[in-house]
Length: 555
Image (cartoon, rainbow, N blue to C red; front, side, top):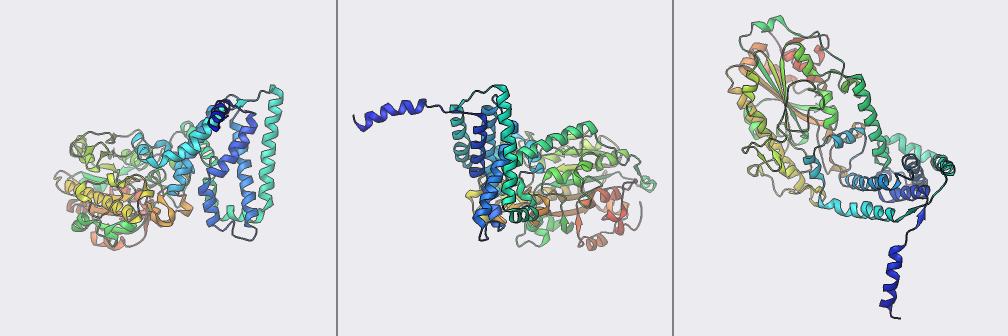
């Protein structure tokens, strides 16, 4: 018989083969697969930390590998059973393949903050991450093993025996993890003690544990509700004598880092419009977090990073509530994915899906869209007002979509979502062009406010966090704060005041320019806004008010 004829006979038999395996065997095989093929970021980070560099490095690596397999088996053993093993493990294979790809490509850590960011991303943001580069990893490490999984026949067992075998798997996994960790305790404990963040790289344990924590936190938050703060707030009596109401526009930037801010002395003039206006610039400002999910609630809270307590911050009302208690109207205008509960129950407008042809296109809207109808919206109510404009700004990885063609000043640019296909120069060029779009938006907003003859106007701009552009293999943001580089935690901040606002508030701008050279942070924002708007309340702390030392008269 010819070779061709024999192969034609064998192929149907091979295709029909369906192995019979127990759920526990599948759990062990899946755990080995995940440890070997879904943890490149972890193995690379552990190696870079020197964990495997000693003479017994191979032994340390073997112990860590066994521990990862055992811990994964323990988790999967708790999740999977005869009825869920195929559908749930299929989902885990696909999600883990995607998670491993993003961790390797961008250097991200799947802690609770990053999981919250993922869950709160809209379809447009998510679509920017689903690129052609994701197809091969999904096929190799997700679709292919899932297809093999569905070929397996599950070995039947009586219920009593199945429970005993499952208990045996869980006990054995726990014991094996302990033995593996003890096998090289000194090296592994030093690694985990000095690099605690590495636990957020062990996949799929990282996102399973973080997802569980997020679910528990959200459930507890719904039960607790939000604690009121500053209910005693009132506008100082001296304020009522001023002839014009005040309008403060607070622009919350997105992903602009201080290192690329022209006003801070960056080699490129990425803020030419603001340079002509000459606002008060703060060159040394530290963000409360390395992600929007952390920074935005934190900067609007009286508690801040200095005494950071996530539950307390997310479980309390915000600066906007205090302003409302004082009788100052607030409005949140959003070109992002929401206010992260900062404006919950208060006036909110989303421009994420606006259709203004002047500012919007298939990829979304430029931030200028948030100025549309602003004067009329604020003017509908008398008295002082604080408006928040939440930018899309420099949101990555599609920096090339964040600026119009006329601002494509630095070339060549990275014109794809897949940053791995671009060199660092192209990425930085696209990012800097997007910074110039923020510069133009802020200048336009200032001119808009300067033309308002009905109110004394002011603007404060601060970015929520910075961005990594390939330094040390890191991209985007969201690295755990304890190890986040300054590129992710140092942000720009500028302030502008109309002559009427400065005069009515008794604000010495030259004094403020001198004070601006001192270090500042997101922690100052809450108290500075209250001080600027002359709100008296027990939650206000004068030492945290950036304006306090520069107000020489009350009006």
